[in-house]
Length: 183
View (cartoon, one colour):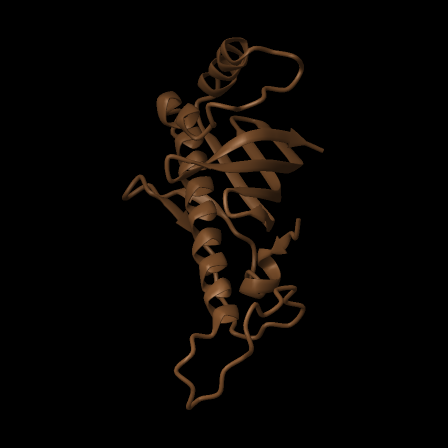
């Protein structure tokens, strides 16, 4: 099975992706613009049909694949933004809704044990801020993505940096976390 590296498709994400709560709107904000380049260096996609000429009426299928991956990548990023927003706002129902029904908690916990553990951790601080950088998305297929990033977590006087890896699956047309690992 071929893995598609979204970074190769989308180009570089310029700067650091910072997702924070915007005080005025209570909406997450991407502080540094995400820019997509049309330059496709290192693209691993192979054309499934011959490239067409300008005068041809045949569709450019490689271009269509690229566009589909861009849309899928933006959907994954949107889910991550919403998950972070819920976490920062200590909105437990929304936070937990971004975990798939098939979510596999770490440390041999049941889903109920894991949720109780997370509730106590999320509700304890007065304020939570999450900053993400080095975001990388790889699709195994059209319903599974592996997402890695550096996460900086700040809550009250605590501050942690960790590499995080999420396995995300498309469930009811929403990208949700199936597995979560900190490295």
